[in-house]
Length: 89
Image 1 (cartoon, rainbow, N blue to C red):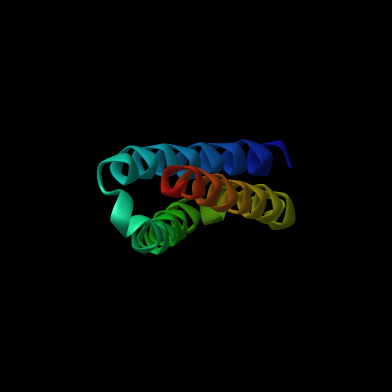
Image 2: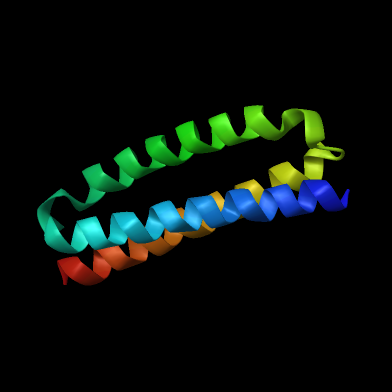
């Protein structure tokens, strides 16, 4: 159970790192904000899929891992949308 939580937080850190890199990109290309947002969602999903396949044998409780990953994806997308809205105004 502890391993699943640790791997979940590592995956959350990966998602947040991708989000902050996308925010830096969006500040340069403000007109393509929503396109970059959907592109970043694709990159997050591919990265998380690869990471999940790599750690799958070590996950004891997949529900904890999935919950942490889902929360991090939701947070990063809402945060990115808020930042894009701020740059539009």
